[in-house]
Length: 189
Image (cartoon, rainbow, N blue to C red; front, side, top):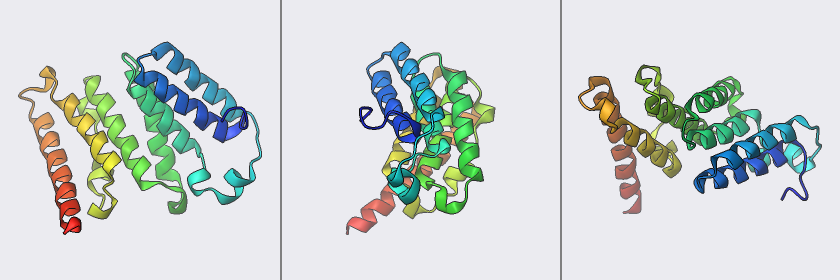
C-alpha cells in the first residue's frame, strides 16, 4: 500500500498497521521505527479524494492514528508511559470531535487500552472506564470485549491481589461482558 500512498494520513495508517504486526512478532525496535515513520508520513501534505471527500471507513483522523499508535505501544514491553501519552491524546481527540466524526468502538477501545496500560504501570487510580461502562448493549462490539479482557488480565497481576479497587473494577468488567454475551445469545434465538 505504501507504493501508492506515501504521504498523509492513509500512509500513516499503513505504517501503523506495519507497526502493529511488528509488535505482534515481538520486534519492539522496528515497531517503534514504524510508528515514527507514521508520524513523518502524517506530517507530509497529501490530497486524496477518497479520504478527504468520503471519509467514513476511508478516514484517518488524528484521533484514529493516535489510537493505533498508542495501542501498538501498549503491546510493547516497557513502553507504558509513551502508550499512556498517545492513548490519552486519542481519548481527548475523540472526546472533542463532533459526533459524526467519532467512532464509538475505537473511542471505547482507546479507553480500555489506556486502562490496561495504566494498570500494568501500577496506576490503578488513573483508570476511568466510565465512557465504556456507559455504552448501551447494542454498542458493545466484540473488539471492545477483547480489549476489556486485556484489562482483566492486568488486574489479575499479583500486585492487585486483595486490592478492593481492583476487585471492584474486575467485577464491573465481568458484569459488562456478561451482559454483552447474554444479549448476543438472546439475539441468536
